[in-house]
Length: 468
Image: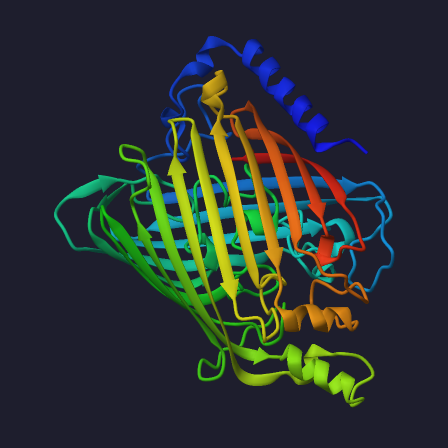
């Protein structure tokens, strides 16, 4: 098996080769190629078609194709929800059409349609930090197009001073009041707005792992495709921002149907964001996150007791579900620019582990740290490179449930010799032409599914991404 050291050596060699072969035209500042601005040449464009900065109508799209594989690895046993120990490969594809309209300077309507096809390795089972964020966790849904986002954005000015804004599929205004309220209502993805950072939240050009791109302990409201209906209010100022969101929860864990009865099921999300890092003179962000989920959740302890008292033939979290149960958690995020080309980030998250993991993944605590480097450092201004490490864990009740043979919606080896799931990921994203990018990614997973009796696993991947 190729070691991480050898893989990283090859990746570094690729960086050096690209740096020597790239023309001097690529040495322009990366700031000149912000997404949404009209491209001036093939070298500076980030989309195949130029995007207007003045039109009230927005139309764009993305194609993201990921091929991942892993060789066979050691496993003393396997269960229904295990990562397969035999060598395998899988390809996922995600197609998105973004549309939007500025009804006025302060009112926008945004609508996105997606098609998710293919599959992930082992059908996205066996890992809390799964290797591909694009994968839909229910492969039986097929690739039929579906409505991903449909929302209204209302901007309410609180000051006369204005600031420039980057235009994109989820925000069309190019100037905004320095102090303002923003209200969004409709269908959306919670993590489009909560727990985001500039170098560790984009699975299309950056990292691919679930618990690197998002806080693994943030069991955010979403259906199985990652979307929900809700509303959010955000206050933004030059010094800090605050946002609050009320979202719908799925009717069952990892379910596609949402519960519209807010008296019994809902999710409150709140985040404070300080626009200041730890280093003077360098950009940075500090984020404090909290959430509370109300849903028809099961109890690990009750499922365990029912099995041990022989009321059930096996631990079954679904049989212990009760409406109105509460699951809450906290998160801290830090993003710090060290130079114009290099930014580091870290995340920490925790949630109470007595009730079942319900919407995102099976993690009760998580800590991650990573670095993103812009290619302008080696005269490849649209290239990106990154490294990240994440360690995920679960509560005592959760691990006892899995050790007795219980199944979650992601995990279930039939037994468990507990150890923290540790993941190292590195990628290189190469800009080929205008909006066409390709990436090489490697993930090394120790104790997959928190099980010392299985792994480690090396999962390389290739990604093709097109923005148009």
